[in-house]
Length: 442
Image (cartoon, helix red, strand yellow):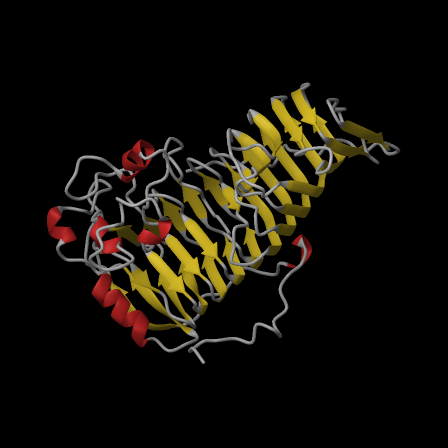
């Protein structure tokens, strides 16, 4: 059995916003690795630095660390930075990035080729062409913790060229393979806690096919103009918690994707704050299925979208049992979007089917525009709204939907082709109080 393996059958994972527990605790350090570089005016990556990566020293420490402990990355006087290519995590071992320390991603794409010598990272369109800055494949009880920073340098020119990762990705219409900051594939019990992540070349944190993950108390701050820099993207993963995070980025703040390898089941998104970005999303890949997702105590401040489920016939599937409770939005242009026609001209037989979607205690400080659509009469959006209040009347596009309102007031009553609205307002709860919902994004 792999070192650090756990009995995943016996483990009990949280199933509600009320039982997510306390913040993860960093395990004791087996060793410390001292920083070798100094940040000058926010820059660490000279050509000389790129020729002397810290990858070998850190990787050797990870490989030698016993399960149940951590490798601690620390400052050495004025030296407070590391420069790395792809690092491979180990079962049972955490990487502890100390406060005041920054781990920078190399600007050389060759240091992130998933297959050494392939030359594909930064040239191919398949995300599998690139390893992450931190990569975990089939590992258990591993991750990253601490108070430091991971910086992907996505806004700086890649080595050998004049374009940044973001410029290259924009030129490829978002389809370029680029390094993620954390790429976890398969395995169980991934923990990402306390750190700041910024400037990823593409998505920041992606647990794919992971059962049991915790993303807790992290900050993601990246230029809002950066393309495809999603914050946290659980993909085909289950039994996960994303809590107490602050996320402002260039694309989806969180995007739950259901394209494998297993049905997304039992995710809890609790006590988070979103700044710039594309909001709280599910999709666009939903073909394997997404079910039982609970979003609670969420603020969205200046996102383009608010609550969004998006898919189309090329990648659609069943999305069911999704609840959003205690949500505040301001300066959000499209607060509610349920769109089964996400890609114009998409073809296929994978029909998007959005069922049992529930909104409770949602307060939008403004209006904006809404899209409330099912795929067709045989696959209607089924949506319940209870105490959902817009301070200004939004523009609503609705079709093929069965919508229940109440028992507490709802300030909108959608109409449209194939839309049925069931009024059941019997209570009189006030709108959710959003006066203390907002935080700075720095």
